[in-house]
Image (tube, rainbow, N blue to C red; front, side, top):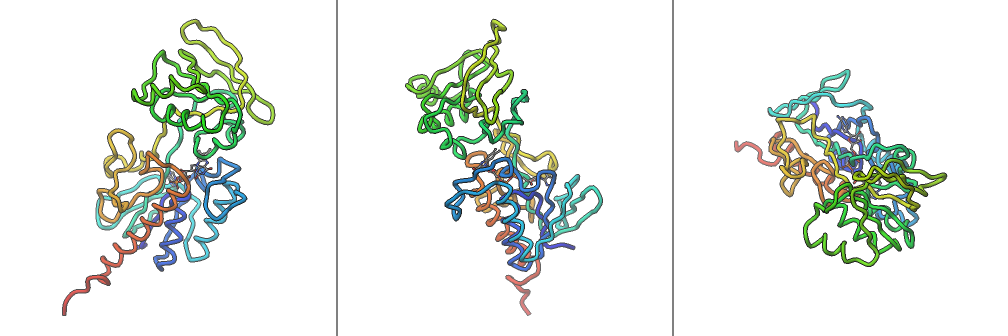
Length: 313
Ligand SMILES: Cc1cc2nc3c(=O)[nH]c(=O)nc-3n(C[C@H](O)[C@H](O)[C@H](O)COP(=O)(O)OP(=O)(O)OC[C@H]3O[C@@H](n4cnc5c(N)ncnc54)[C@H](O)[C@@H]3O)c2cc1C
């Protein structure tokens, strides 16, 4: 019987591992297919405290993992395929092993929805971004495109006007889904232009993005559009399929429902990072909630073992 199994090796999972290991819980962390999580998709993290010169996402992952292992975390390079989180003893299956644990910490993150067009993958981190807070600064005085028409696209588009000289919001419909207040701000903003009924067919460039191929969905006309960067905000998929029917989700965002102390609806199961956060989605907030989850786990295990509330003699 393990004390704690952590699912996911992004900032949330690895921070939970550091804290759980330092609490002598000997955690097992199952890394999943994307070792290091979403941060490894970026070469420049400039907003993580403690690194004034910035650091690469993969480098950050290696440092986090080293620190977790130093205190006794066992990192398993496998994927969780099945879980049973409903009883006091939790079962976690990977492709070749089955674990039993007192606690499970879910840190499976989320995946930004992709346009799935040629050039998107190739230029991710080289002009293609899914996070204005993370990358907006790199586009100071540049012309950027924002794809999407919902609240997050408009909100992020407005945020980008702080840096970019021009923001072109490209939307496949002829009206925005975003709330009226955001809509009005965007429509009246001097740096923002709206391009309606249009989809991106291809992202082109050499070292970095320099051009989009656009198609008007009403006329079927295609055109090229010179651009310095493209921010894609068409939604996120929280990675929750594994927990279907066992863990309650938020109805609007599909993120895992937790209380302010990372507890899910199942006793002994905690969730942290982007899988339970539809708002901030940053490495630092993921790491912060990973810390919370591990501290809650420690308390829970101690309670189970009767350390906190020993039976009266
Ligand atoms: C391109 C890009 C650039 C970014 N830049 C910045 C930035 O500059 N600064 C910043 O603060 N934030 C940035 N972010 C956001 C940041 O990366 C995320 O907020 C953060 O990684 C979330 O951490 P997490 O641990 O919650 O989840 P994730 O990083 O998404 O990690 C999820 C983990 O779960 C694992 N997993 C999923 N399913 C399973 C399974 N079945 N079994 C086992 N493991 C599983 C995956 O392998 C992965 O390791 C960026 C995001 C992107 C996409």
